[in-house]
Image (cartoon, rainbow, N blue to C red):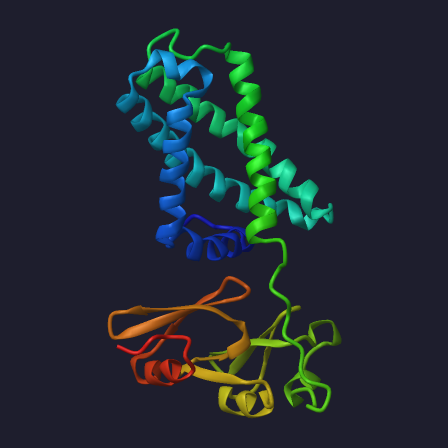
Length: 265
């Protein structure tokens, strides 16, 4: 049975991919682990020799840092639907994520450390882990996601795309993508998506003056809503601001390179 992933989780993971793929993120975690290892908190400075202590803390920071980032961002995206303030959402996400992270730390400590190596009690360590998880969740929210991607607006002198007149009023937002499905074209805007009985080529013509690019015989995307582009052998793929990932056919890779969104070979 296929695992159904909520669209909010897909969007959160799409936002995290550039961070997780950035070597500087992992280098920063290693550096943080070394600093903490030198400081030797929770009694590890006296319980462990220098090299095992550094290795222990680098390993713990790498594992809990990446796990916490994924959990906190996914939970924040889900909780954001509640309408709560962004900082409160980040705080709650950090506290909820603190539970599996705490279990992970306690489990690893039981495998890697001897009884008594941690100088604080189980309750104190647990409370500290929840507090750290909440603090990091709020900090990451402020540093990386303080300003959500703003929907691009058309200049005042440019008329809105004629295609929007075919959509329900509740969906008449900036265009993100057009996708051909049988005799229909699925129109996706920042407010949602719907299907229209029309050819993709006709929908593309009515999408003007929105800057866009046909990336596949079945897909057109608005350039302002391409968050990431990467190669996949002779082909490529793009990730949109709504988290959707679409393929770029071989014949359209050159056009994507000309936009500067995909480095040339």
